[in-house]
Length: 208
Length: 208
DNA sequence: CCTACCGATCGGTAGG
DNA sequence: CCTACCGATCGGTAGG
Image (tube, rainbow over all chains, first blue to last red; front, side, top):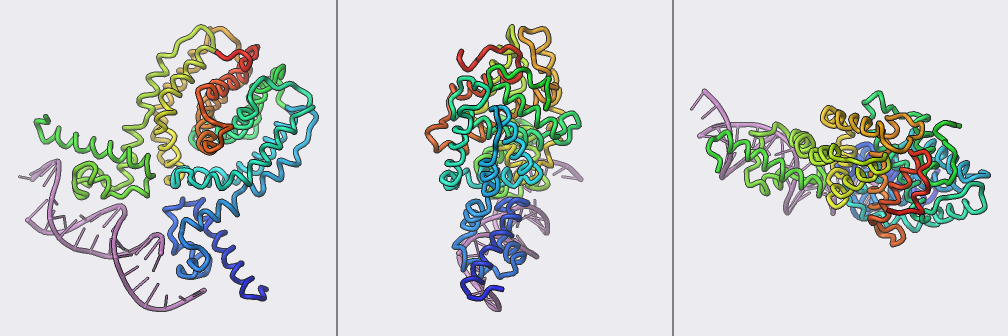
């Protein structure tokens, strides 16, 4: 039970963000009325404006405070393995496990692209970048030799791998021949590993 | 000059679609008022409803009749080369030349994902699929050996490559270290070629 | 945090 | 009677 009005206010604000997060993901930003947020959050529309100056401020709070990277990045720091291939593969598995059955990250980013032209993306950098950069150090001293790609390209293409898999899966989901599955994701990862590693063998013949 | 009222009607309809196409790409679907479409098209709002029953019908006409694949797919049929690497690379170059400085395709697909949950995507299959499937035949008898990936995975990861490049470029565009450029795209393609080809050499050491 | 309400604008339709 | 289109306005809802 909240004791002070301070705590009560913080709880209300948190409830508004939770409700808005879900509605934005389900319907998009412009298609989510303030009335619906207020009803589902159990407060009046006017009350919301005690916590946020504008509707867009709710969006900013959502991507800052409820963005799935809060759950995902700490997982990345736990990735271990003897070889680069093992590390990349287990990182990919972790990411997929978190992301694909809960595609909030993708929806939030697409809404940000479509409805805001990515203006809030820089807000996310300071939180995400340190984790990404530390990923590069993880490769140092591991088995396997990386081809001569710039680190930024390796990182960017790794992140892009999941967008590639997710978007093509959604766009082609009605075609039986391109059904998404763990096996297909493994093949995407194998293709990526073949792409970045020297002497990767032929991972397509040796699924793990 | 249009002679019959039939021709005039067709021109008006075409003008409405052209205007809506640009506004949807720039602002998204929900953020584009019928008033703005009507003003820019030089007709009244009421007149639009002689050509389309609802606003959503305009969207459907846009993605059916103005989708950039109308320009892109014919280009793909002109791709030639002695080796698989050459073919994939020139296909990628053609695609990028068409797409990256005119990212209509991406925006249309993202709007479709965010604001319509991809319900109209099946409409596009019948037009696009035949071209994609014929791509697989192009590889037959060319120099270079493909790794043992299913054709659907090769195709899907090729399409995904451009989504990967485009989205990560937009999301990270404010970071100088990940600036998009033709060189970076070549590296994405090299990574992909390393990924799908046996004995690709190390393309990252031998930029073309 | 609420009730009550604003200026404006939304997608869509009336009769002619 | 058709088409393409008009000026005016509908019932509801947007953010604030």
